[in-house]
Length: 375
Image 1 (cartoon, one colour):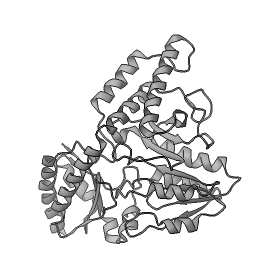
Image 2 (cartoon, rainbow, N blue to C red):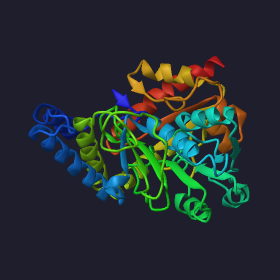
Image 3 (tube, rainbow, N blue to C red):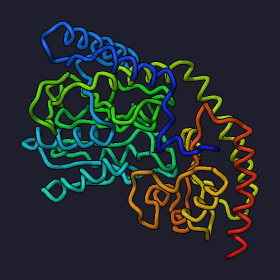
């Protein structure tokens, strides 16, 4: 099997899975219980939280455990807007957001909130001048992802944060799901940040919302003691500890891993550039882990299933996106309708090998020639 869909999800690291199993068996007490088993469980969670805080350079009380980035995004967006609705009803975002950001914002539009989509420059990055122009005294939230999940565009998070910080009534939320564990990212200018463990070789079903101390939100879930007043429910100790382990492992040699993926990305681009009908949609502002291409005239799902026959796995759009024919993200970056209708995503990892890419190209060539010949 050749797996090239790491941006959708990753295989659980064996060490992480081992940690999950050990914690499940050893620490059976409810962390909220007053007896010794509960106290021991609570201490283990506190140690895991301390490690996560250290790795991300945030405070321990700023970490809220969730079921994943989708819940974190919903909690951040709805929680801020509900808490600070007396300040204003204006939201700013982009057309590059994951559906777990865009859909809650669409929901809030139905409740009377107004939304502006900031312009993007020629590279697909936020136009900082336009962002400055859009912010008013009614703006309470700016939500921009760190890395787009389809094309891989890396946004200037620090610069966006600097602009938003000049407006005391406004908060900056960033979905960092496609960045954490792949590149070194600084959250100091971000008010709220969301991510999932399964994107960096952790277990599905656990994620975080980083919410800075100065900020308050209305919870999505009420009732029941937990690790935070902002998210009720019995703390999922094995998942929390395994998240901490996965995060620590992902940060080991992160710079070297990124450089290696850069080499893979460059190698693959050079191979794909030779095909007349291939258009490369990712650009110099994209992280190397995501390479989005279009095969003009070939439906994305047709190529996906053609490669699948050879046990090769890629993606069309984000795994959580709707089944609309056109990729909005690709269109926003390329402004090309054909490219947006025929895009596929190849996502790489430090676990990917050159031999795997050679095998991919071998069968890509077969599928390409068959499908373009039919046209």
